[in-house]
Image 1 (cartoon, rainbow, N blue to C red):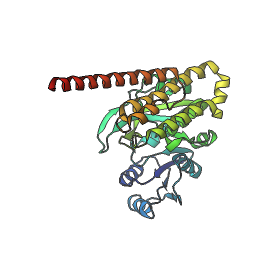
Image 2 (image 1 turned 45 degrees about the vertical axis):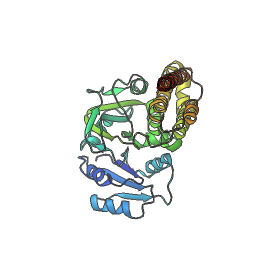
Image 3 (image 1 turned 90 degrees about the vertical axis):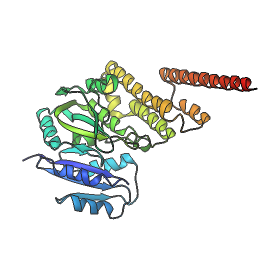
Image 4 (image 1 turned 60 degrees about the vertical axis):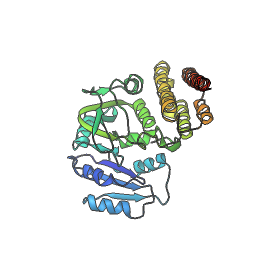
Amino acid sequence: MAKLVTIAIPVYKRLEYLPHVLDIVRSQDYPALELIVSDNGMNACSVREIVDQHYPKQYKFRQNACTVDVSTHFNQLIAEASGDYFVLLCDDDEISPNYISELVSVLDRHPQATVALSRQEIMDENGAILRGSKDPLPTIMSGADFIRAAWGTYEYKFECFNTFLSRTESLRACGGFPDFARGHGVDNALLIKLCLLGQIALSSRCTSRWRVHMSSFGWSMNLPDIAEATKHFMQFLDADPIIRAFASRSPAQWKQMNSCLVKMAWNTYFFRWRDLYRYRMSNLQWIRAGFALPFIAAYYLAVTFTLAKVSKAAAFARGRKWVSWAIRV
């Protein structure tokens, strides 16, 4: 008997991709699937009608009476799952037809692994492939080595960890998704916990595809929410029970991993602050936002250097304007 795999699709207000992702689930070559579709956007009957139209097999449907936060919604799906394995599949992402069968086979061969990951492709809003992760991937890695590779050296060029196959009992044992502002970074946090509970299995023989647009990148969030989520992530690194237990057992190893994770977090915030939100905010709001994170020497040095460059450029522009005025006079 094939082990049951739960594919959970969380839905908010975006419904246009849902028919396609249902077709993708229907095309899986694995025989034992449980599909859960969950409406967190108070869409009345619309979501269920789409599922009935595009998924003729048996499925579970759930609907929140009012919208809950992202982490609560994702954890509701984990609690609802009946499968031995679990995949969270966002409504605008894709997986190859052999995704489930290949990764179940990988985890069955590696019982010490808590997670299985495929190769990754990045696509635009229309489904055109933009780039992909590195091939070939190693078959098995320690959790510590994966953390360093994924968020330290970026050697396998993974860009997002929304989609992976995990043992359902492992997800429940580690407490599921933590609660960060607007759900920003909770997929990374969950994967970090799973890394510290076991090994990470990988396969280049199947593919997950991440669709990039404003909301998938989190670019539709305001900067104070991203700052709050970044602080939540850093607090998580200090306070989560699984992390604290690992740090107690392997302090030197965790110190190295923690360093690369903190750098990843502040780098993500810094580059959004510097490049994306510069002209979305007033000058004073933008300057204040630069100092919204806890003190990290490297981060504050980068912010100070950026502000000095901006100030110098502004002074140069004022000087050119004055010279131009003087010449005209």
